[in-house]
Length: 185
Ligand SMILES: [Zn+2]
Image 1 (cartoon, protein in one colour):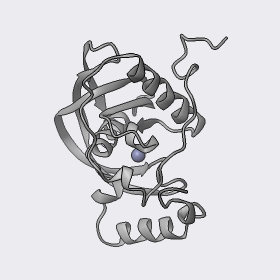
Image 2 (image 1 turned 90 degrees about the vertical axis):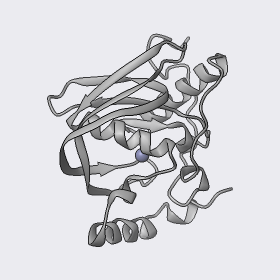
Image 3 (image 1 turned 180 degrees about the vertical axis):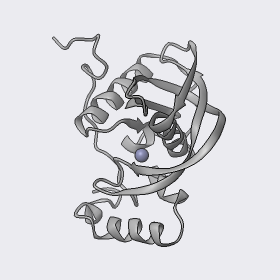
Image 4 (image 1 turned 120 degrees about the vertical axis):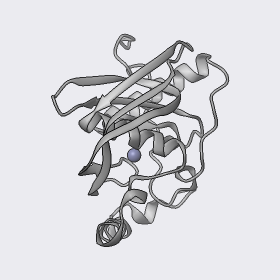
């Protein structure tokens, strides 16, 4: 029996959508039903995130166009933040802008110094429909901004400019997974 107290232990590992897949660039829809299907989606997101050794995962990264993400992410003080948000809304993004290393399970093996605000507040709901407010600083603030971007059809490389952007996109084009990233594969 899977231990249902561990997030993702009853979830299924789903195929990750990679750069070039249209699921990543279409904005996601609001969740309207807080039902068993949503609970299964959250479990699948945890299971897939852990299997891929990620710190966050948005639903459209497994091809589900709904506004849901999960995270298990440290901040700069090494505090662990574990949870999920449904219909998240970025209500505060402030503090100094820091360029720090950022990667994405949809561009595996690639990392680029990406500017992000140091402090973020996100409101939303948990899987049962209870309101939630999540505050992040440092690397966790980066993670929250990154996952909210996904739900709007964005990717962290959108925040890069110039040489950094060209380097990241060139590395993605040459990556071993690039040939398999096309939809339907
Ligand atoms: Zn990502």
